[in-house]
Image 1 (cartoon, helix red, strand yellow):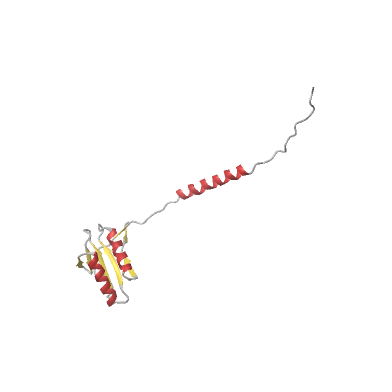
Image 2 (tube, rainbow, N blue to C red):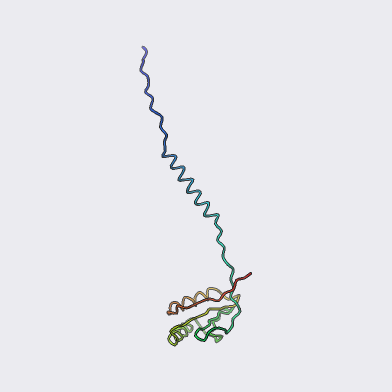
Length: 134
């Protein structure tokens, strides 16, 4: 016996969900690859030679290569003594300005610690003197 029943064919469909997945994957790969191609360049800096120049209403704090601190070329024993000196200077001068200098081989972390201490004590005009190495 022969069966004359034809199988019903479903209409062809284009599945778009896998296509969207592939497009998002390609987009993510493109973004990640383009971010890795960006070159981030820094500028090599070093501290200039210490000097006494500056305005009379500002003070210069210098860091030597050995990590010693100088307040307008006068030695300071420790960071605690520096904090006391900054507080006295700020109380005497409401427009206190501090310039941080150092030698070429001085530890940069000390300069950052001085910057943090001055900001913590309320001095808002603090700057670091640097020069670009060519």
